[in-house]
Image 1 (tube, rainbow, N blue to C red):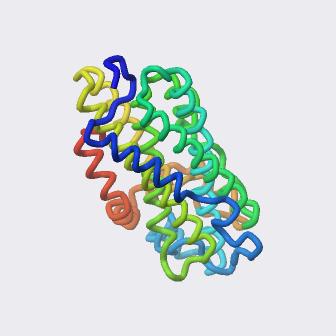
Image 2: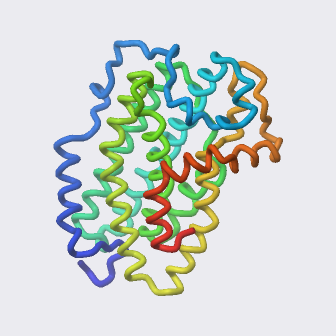
Length: 296
């Protein structure tokens, strides 16, 4: 690899990146066949484990009827899918921008996987949007702060930094979705969609980890500490965002017990014992990796 490379990876992992690309070429999500689009999505079932409903473990949840709890689960799933859409439609211009701008400073293996990664994110976005439309779900607004990070801040920063922060966002989103959607009682098409999506995402996460680890192995102490400080500001907000999004109050057909401006109630949900236990379990692998690199 050239000395002036802007994106590096340990030599021992170059072949692994080639294997990621080869696997993607042979088996990746097919928008046309990933779901039985001719069948109905059963909105009478829960699209997620009810234990993962954001206000579970608080008096606000206990006050809801069974129908309201199920409606809330679908709205929360709409938020999760919306987050994937907002994230995954920003990654192709970011990563293809790296390939275009630094075509002579990124190795062929890494360029190929950046392109594969981008292609898969486009397919995911199309699939998620089609599912939302078929299920009658409404999009949530772009995540405040994170969307600007992806579209305005990261394109101006070194590629490895962009890979790191897209990894953190995507990894948190993926673990949140997988832990809540794979139970036997979950609506079948929802469960299948998240499972099939995970096969591609597992490769994306591996790539992001390898690039990020190489960055911290090779960056100057000053540069590394600047990125760590940035992560320490962003990562806790990211966890809170996936634990509870106040916008949910704007989507329910019933009067939601927590309004977007009631910060004391929102803090109560964010810091509830129930959510703390869920986060420790579903984000355990992420927490361990982030702590190893001193990112929080």
